[in-house]
Length: 149
Image (tube, rainbow, N blue to C red; front, side, top):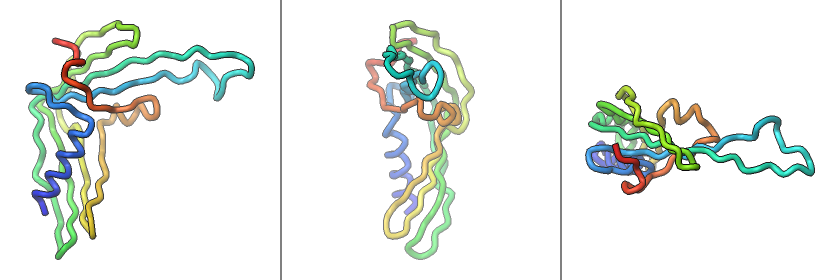
C-alpha cells in the first residue's frame, strides 16, 4: 500500500502545483478584505479592492518515503515533501511586479493518508499560506504565466 499512498500524495501535491522546468510552482491569489468593519454602510457602494498573486517556485523537491503503520487491510502514514530552495514573487492586479526573493527550503507540504475501506487524506500546507486564511486561494498556474527570472 506504500506505493499507492505515494501516488495519492503526489496527485494531491500536483493539484495546486505545476512542474515548470526544474521548479514546482504554486500560485496564491490574495484578495483584500474590507477597509474596516464587518459590512459596508447601508446605501454606500464599496469599490472592489484589488489584490495580488504570489508565485512560489520550489526547486529540488523530493518526498520522504511513507512513514506508515499497517495492520491487515488497514494502513496509515505521512508523506512529506521537501524543497532544497524556494523563491517568491508578488504581481499586483494592476501589473506592478516585485522581484524574486529567496526563501529557505524545508518541508513545503505533507499528506497524512489512511486506508480503511478507501483512501482518506489530510493535507498540511505551508504555514504562511495557512496564515493568509480566507484571503488566499491556492491554484495551479500555467507555466506561461510565471514571471521570468
